[in-house]
Every structure is written in structure tokens, then in C-alpha cells.
Length: 298
Image (cartoon, rainbow, N blue to C red):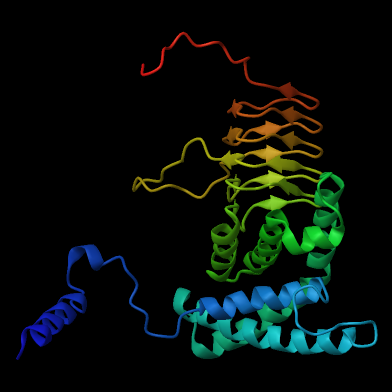
């Protein structure tokens, strides 16, 4: 046996030896896992459904819209059934028959929510367009703005998570995170007319509750201040992120931490570190910058 063959053989044996202690926590798939390419296609189909003509090659007019909507919907349902089925098979202990029935029901439940997803996204588009003098049209915002791209994925992921679908919601939210730099956990609850301006570096944690007509600028973090641990010393999934009430603006690079409330009609200035609740109509800004006495090189 030559050197190459020996190296390949020994490497394969080492990689397939799952007895190492550090490997114990890694799942060993016995069935097909969700397919990220198919999940991306699901997102693209939803975009084609809620924004007709924007994200498909077809020339959709009033006379053809129902036809294409039916085509997209049928394909979406089939992909959802398959990918939800894969997620349930791997992440639950249900039997194949139970999984098949549940997958079909969950997919149909999501299809039923599409009109509401479309309505919410329309409010988001309006909020972004109306609040940005650089936006030339609603169409430009739909096509180009990363905040809307992130919200499309979030609205989809949130409904799937609400239906009880495992893993797919996180995959969908992380697809947007990778492409936009905006990290929204699908468990967060976000009201209508939500605007993320610019967006890069925005983080919204799992248990956030955000009201309507809220605007966030780039670099804003709505995060947890600390974790509650169980008897084994592991973090518990309890409410730990901020509540942002209606008509709040949070400017760039501000960090809001813990289960605190930012009262309605408040403004949080840029670069603020906020870990205490503030009442409605508050205006929170950082201290003025002070001149430095440092010399070059110090």
C-alpha cells in the first residue's frame, strides 16, 4: 500500500471512530436532514408570492397573477412538507406516519398565514420608505434594502417557529444574517411598520418584544445582560431580552440589555449602553465627548 492510500485509510478510520469523548455530543444522523438549498428555495418562493413580479423571471400581470400564484404555492407546499418532515424526523422521536401527518398540517398552516405575512411586510416596506429620504420608491426598497431582506426571512421564520417547526426557522434567519449582517432570532416578536435603517450589525435576541412603528439603526443590539442557570449550571430559556414599546427610535451602535422596557415614544441616542428601563417619552443620550490629552503614540 502506497503512502497516499495509507494516509487516506488511517484518516478515514480516525474520522469514523465516534468513540472519542469529545464527539459524544455530535448527533449521528440516521435519516435525511433538512437541505439548505431547498430552504433557500422556500424563501425565494415566499418572496415571489408576497411581492409578485419582483423575484421571479415570469412577467406577472393582472391576467396571469392567479396562475403563477397557484404554481408557486403548489411548489412551496411540496418543499415545505418535505423539509419540515426532515426536520421532524431528525429532531423529534415521532414515528414516520406521525411525522408525515404533522408535516403536511404544519405546511398547510404556514400557507394559511401567507396573507398576514404579506400584510406585515407591506407595512415594513412603507416604514422603511417613508423614513428614508434616499429611497426613491417602494420598489427600490423591496429590491435593494437589506432591512427588508432580513424582515422577509424573519417573518417567514417566526411563523414557522410559532407553528412548532424545528430547526428550519433558525436556518432561515441565519441565511439572512449571513447575507445582510442583520441577526434576528425567529423567536422575537416584532410588530408592524418595523424599520431597520442601514442594518449592518443589528442583533435582536430571542425573547425581545418589539411594538409597532419602531426604528433601529445600524449596530443596535437588543441583547441579554445575564443568564439564569438551572440546577446543572446550564442556561435556562427564560425572558431575558428588552421590551421595546411603540414609536421608539434607537440610533446607531446603542446596546439595550436585559429584560427592561423602553417606554413608548422614546428616543435612544447613538452609542448608548442601557440596562435600566426608561418611561415613555424618554430621551436618552450619551455624555458629550471630552477632549483627550493623549499625544500620538500614547
